[in-house]
Length: 175
Image 1 (cartoon, rainbow, N blue to C red):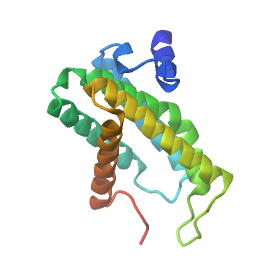
Image 2: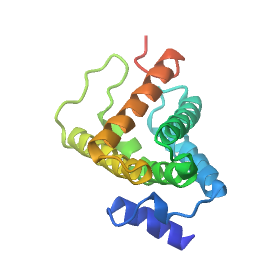
Image 3: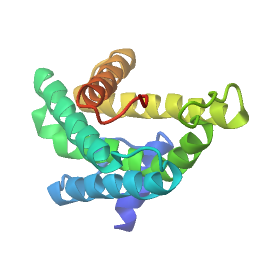
Image 4: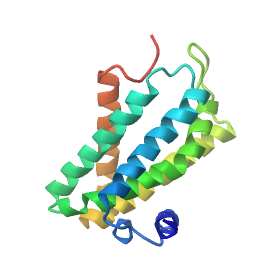
């Protein structure tokens, strides 16, 4: 377990990739469950106006893994799903305790004014950029394509998750 945590830290510090994680379906499921718990627990406390946190977390995780499976299959690397998915979910788990409180602070109340250019808003933006970069590197390691292409593929997946969540009425602006 300690070696797995060290590998996640090494991925964050750009010294390792998903191939350094064990290929364990149990670890993939464990990181998925942990991410859902991390997103719904603190999220329910810090974002009380957000009513559908559990379905959002569940849907976004499952759709993200589905998108990843599709991308890996398209690039002829379907056998890398477990390690790549574990790496991406694990990185999301590492940032959830930081990102959720920051998001709760910069997100306006329903009907309120958005927070613009505050230090926390800049921190949220920096975290987002770093997560995009890290996930692009993870995907690059998995499909062996240029980093820019992998970042675009990751962002397309995030856009797909966001669009599907909105289409199902599980997120977005309150009416």
